[in-house]
Each structure stands twice: as C-alpha cells, then as structure tokens.
Length: 230
Image (cartoon, rainbow, N blue to C red):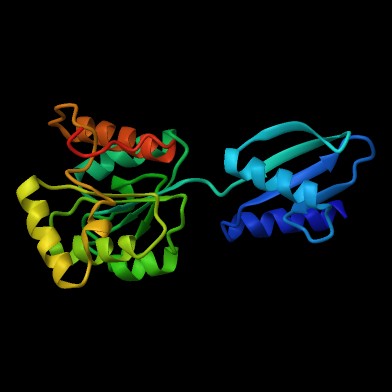
C-alpha cells in the first residue's frame, strides 16, 4: 500500500495535480486524497488542507490524523528573455517558484543567461499551450514586442493563471488593450492584467523592476492583489 501511495504521489507531482496525504496515527492507515474509499470527513479534511496549503495533525471524529497538502509548486512563466527576466528569474526561484522563460529568439534565450532555469524557445502561444497554466501559475510578458507579448497575453487571459502582468508604459498598454479588444476581449479580462507590471516603488533598473514584479506576484498569490490606481 505504501508503495502504491508513493507512485500515486509521484504521478500527481508530475501532472501538477493537487493531492493530500493522510495518515491515521493510531494504526498507520493512509490515503492519497481525494479517494472514494476514504470517509467523507477525511476527504473534506484533505480539501481543507489543500485550500490552506497546510501540513499538520488534526482531530477527525475523535481520531488523530497527519494531513499533508501536496499542492504543485507555484509557477512563473516569463515571456521575453530580456535583462529584467535575468534579474526576475533567480528572485522567483528563491521565492519558491518553478520558473520557465519563453522566447523564440535563441540569442536571448540562452542557457548561460538563465542558469538553472527552464527555457522554452517555442512561440509563446505554443509554449503556453503545452504548459497549460493553472491557478498556481503567474505569467509575465516583458518583450515590448506585440508579436510575442500579444499571443502570450491571449493565452494567459484564456487560462486560470492567478496573475497576468505586462511590461510597458500606460501608453503602450492602451495600444495593447485596443488590439486585444479587437479580438473580443472585454474590460473584465483587462482587469486581470497588471500593467504597468509590478508595484510602484519608483523602480528604474532591471533588478529594481524585478523586485517590484516578484513582490506584486507574491501579493497576488497571498490574496493581496493591489487595485490599480490605489
């Protein structure tokens, strides 16, 4: 049974499937939740643990259970292997994000410029289709090139990504929204885009901008999304 559970946990991690491992302390009985064979109260405890991203011992119907939430790692997808991306990627890794940098321009998307970070040289829409952004994924576009940023934003807005950010001035963003509106996107979709990307801390250099971006992403992940204009 333990081996079967290990295989199930490994599969869930590979497929970015959120699951919970539950062990009854009295006798070692265990489940990988959700599991139809588990009592409803145990499945509910697993769902609650996932929601809170919690690990610990809980009392369920008079019994002690160790509950371990195994949510997939948060992801940051950066479109554009530019200088800001070089500063942002290591910051995001330090903050616990699984980072992918997308850029079909191989001169920019070079391993030596992004050590230890996954690089994808497909076009952004193709790369994001393969990545299948979920509710634990943040997407940031940094290229200033509509040929790259626009397809990425279209894919991002059609996904469950918890954060979508785009680099550029207010003027650039207004033109971007005009293009997206022509494709059928509305104000509800536009409200999802953090632009100009990052917290307003007066950042000017690439490292400073990267700090502002990762701070805003972490805030959005923790339910502290800043209203634009606030």
